[in-house]
Image (cartoon, rainbow, N blue to C red; front, side, top):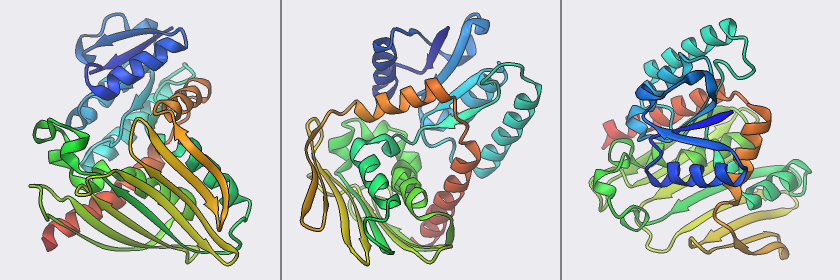
Length: 297
């Protein structure tokens, strides 16, 4: 079967093209509205700019095939609900395995160090978890030299860095209360954000995001009654990573940048998961936080 990569000329689409071909898959790069012979397409990988994800997902769903979409799904909750309804309708009508299903990318869950952290967290290594800190910091012009023309100018930091919110709900469970703020310190978008989450199980999460730090850092700290479980990542290509519990080093070394994408691709191709409802919940929280903080700004 054919894997159709939509809008595959950008960096993320090109990455998926390369990695799918590693698996020996046939990949076709095409604009979604002129794709030929949809009957031979198994999975549609939507890697177009985020501002047109909404219309691309709709078009692909109408073909009755499985849809993979880069994050975020959309920046509009009404559009997200329209997609959910279209997915429900197609899943009820489709006789194909993946027909009507949508999986929104959450590749940080497939990062080998995050998976190691989650395994130890679930095993109770830290004892009773008390609070968790999530941090992502990297100067935006270093990430994307053409950032002024990038989708991030529409999304701002909360939607662009929705991975941290996704991880917070993956580790901590459903949200009970969210407070936070964001500001524009240097760049002409919201480039700095702090969020305080109380989960339904009373666990507390803190999320710190900024597009200002010149050296790239990403980390998670889980503080519990038995100690602290930490992952810290510095740099990119190579990414230097450290996972430790208190003073015990569980992993230290370099991470190959495509490893988490390979892990996610394997999962998607083998399982054809459907996480649309979960992503819409996360998207709703992100949009509420962003909109509230825009009004405060």
